[in-house]
Image (cartoon, rainbow, N blue to C red; front, top):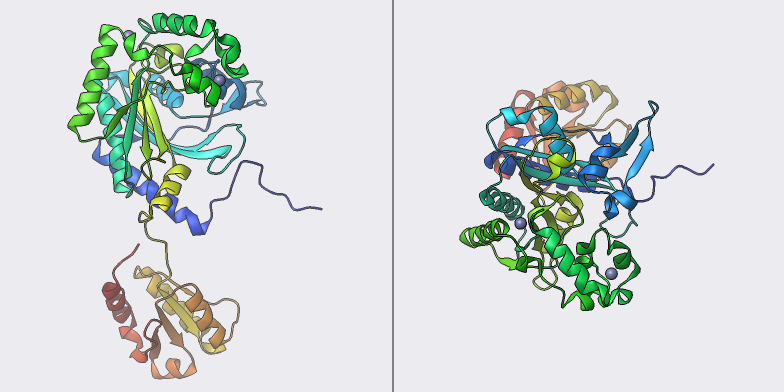
Length: 427
Ligand SMILES: [Zn+2]
Ligand SMILES: [Zn+2]
């Protein structure tokens, strides 16, 4: 029988990498704290309706990419493809309108989309998500963008650029949609099949079609910023000037329409990487109509989501400091069968004192134990054998200098602590 493998589009994040993820989450948590977001840990599955109503059933996500199944209670359940709809659902369900507004939530975890797997894209992927709920002010938009920029800065990511657009609101979007349709109609046959099929239901998506032919055609399409109503125009101007105020590099990108229907006004992405070949590390924007779409009252909201895989790849690409890999400081070598218990007891004391340590359980010879200590990167080795047990001492070998000395048993912990101190804490 063939051994079972992980499903296509999933991956195991193991010890050589998981500490980088822990570092990203640690920095997220610090930024969340400094910017006043509280952590929300939400279920990874929700009622399918939440996404079909909250994301919009003309989107790729809902049309083609959701993991939807019927559970044993005959309910249609979907593994969440994103976090925003769940955040708003939670806000409504817990009546967070009674709290001082706005309510700022952040969360993280796996999302699920049935997409063609490719480099850096998985069917189960991890995102962090920050949302400000209850505020319609453009200042909240500026804050979420600032939050994401600060997150990347603290992670050591440089060359950040904000791409921004406004997708209007229910007052001004119909006119734009009509103008776009008029524009498309005359040359509809020249657009790709996907764009043609979206023509009726979601013509805005033609603007972010990646096919060269469509791109060329839409080059001369009317711009959404030219159709904004007064309120959307003013909102957009405040956001862009606010971003300049905080020193962000901003570029208006009229093609940025986002695949999700509930977005209103601000849509943005942050690019990072080598100038000229920057990749989006986050996408976000305002979604003032989402709460109503899922059956709640009007609750304006704005936020962003960022994939952890993409963040880690960007950090690696830029040579950013990835955090500290966990390491074992001390290895306890048992030099005789009779000294196992003495070694185990020393190991326990070292660990309790807050220094990471390990020992052999495989009955390796001393030489093989030393080799293992070196392979796991232990800085110091403590050696306990018959001789040390009878004289009440412990051999301590510095693996960097190779110097070995003997220390009275009762002084060992103090010596290890002094050594660690001199080496700097790295955990
Ligand atoms: Zn408008
Ligand atoms: Zn197209």
